[in-house]
Image (cartoon, rainbow, N blue to C red; front, top):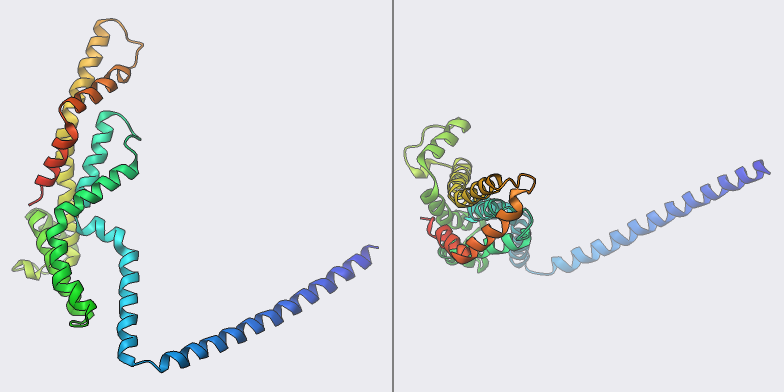
Length: 257
């Protein structure tokens, strides 16, 4: 009985492999036929139109893939999202507001602060490239110029000098000699520094409330009660009464040069 079952399994495996082989060969034949049909159909179109359309598709897909990285590295989003996250931790609520809310608010503030830059990029680089007036290299150069100007205004000289030193590049004689490889990390470093400075100022009043609540609880002998139980509602009440969201957002938008 075991020998018969083994023979049946071997026969079934051989039949399955044979069917898979023929199915694979048939699929490859269908792919080859469809590819040849597509190539013959595409070859009848004008070459210039095909090239322009292909370039637009490649540029669009590339931008979609690297958009989150560009948003963090080239815009004001980094400073804004760090300050909003530090505010949440200063109040003492690690998950409120949720990350989705903070990211959405940071995106709108980034749009407000970067609107002139985006408009310049659209007029000088994107629209001429889409209409075929300039090539990809010229479009990239013209599109980076407003972004470089924005980043230079926010970047400290010490951070630029540090990145030039770390990259072991030749000392630049002017801002035009500084490449994007040095400018972008220097801009991010300056944004981190500015965000931590604003976050420190945001932390101070909430830290003072924690100290006052802890001192009162110790004076009353209520050492077993966690200070956050009393401090958290007081922090929220104070933040609402002083219209903290408006003050913080105005300070954030006004911190960009």
